[in-house]
Picture (cartoon, one colour):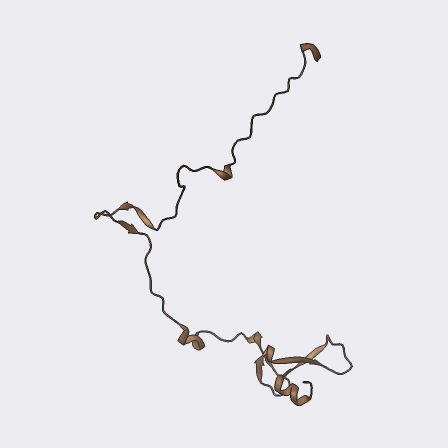
Length: 116
């Protein structure tokens, strides 16, 4: 309604956005992490909130505490030894797809078989 007649809609600018709640401004240095109690002891010193605990070295007992992952050691189909998987190769039958490898030979047996 031009000319200021009644029944018109008045558009008002919205208020400016409020500061983000994610970026609250802190006064001074802000919050700091401290590992001492804020209350002082009788001597005027602050009591530490942490304590040191000695930890035993269990490395000498490695063989008794842990076992080798059985999936990392594979049995050779020729000599029946268990070797790490990286120390051998899969073989397939002659004339079959290269994706149908069903035999595992260790490096020593692969040399004997003439594969390497």
